[in-house]
Length: 231
Figure 1 (tube, rainbow, N blue to C red):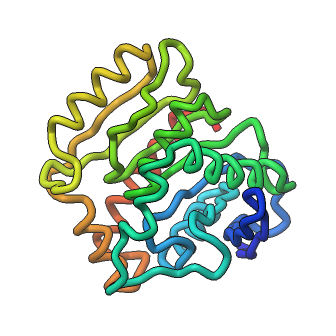
Figure 2 (tube, rainbow, N blue to C red):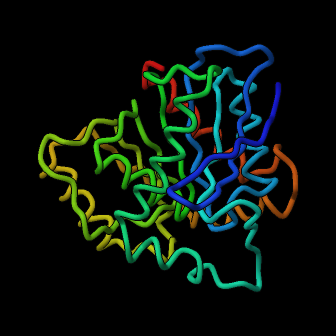
């Protein structure tokens, strides 16, 4: 498995993503990994490495700029807020990451899915609403609301939302509104409820610093859904 940094641009903004792929890989199914507010840190790169071990070309998109590695006590909203307020800008930033993956020889540009965490989970849903050329998207503890609702018969990817019933950020009314949005859009979608706040499990895995931690076990339950996307 080879991991490498990939530099690209969103207009004038330098970005620095991370590509993980098997040795000598060519034309593999791709996974666009959209991170949480921690951006392209060691934890999300390890998840990309695990996807590469499963036979994918996995690319972690840079949300905030080359070298930007946020961490507590910094407030997530200082970084996330501008994207939530400007979804067109958010979609453009994500689309540049998708294009960077599509252009890699390791990846089959016609066979790409996307996985996102927290703000990244919100992001992959925005890509789906924008009819991005993806086989499917998986949103893990992502924000579900949007000011730019999907239009009927325009959503291309299959959509899976994994939502923690105890998630304090996304209340049940947001889940209900998302379901109605997807029904009206005639999308191929599913919301799967987890019996806890998924955020806590992911942070536990991060704190443990081990890909075998309990939180990552839940992640790989999610990863198994890639098998249903005909990648």
